[in-house]
Image (spheres, rainbow, N blue to C red):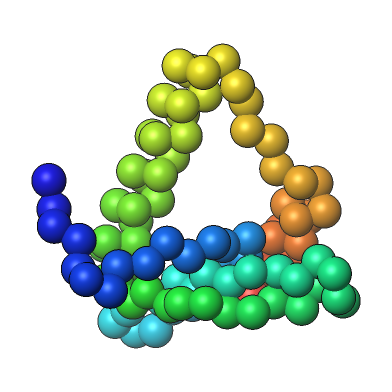
Length: 93
């Protein structure tokens, strides 16, 4: 089991952004302030290789699939957030 660093933190995240450069992928986690006009406060960014990002995506999907199978719970997306994701993907191509 890994040893946690003395400054290890749990950071809540309700917002996720992903950017790419030629050599790296950057995931930024933030918190959406629902009491105001949905302002997002970015908390932390994690930089990794494209290969590591792809592996992370597969590990996350397998973990969610396992959770849904074991718990009998299906995790649904908020339709408005799913539509916003589709629009963002279309505008970036």
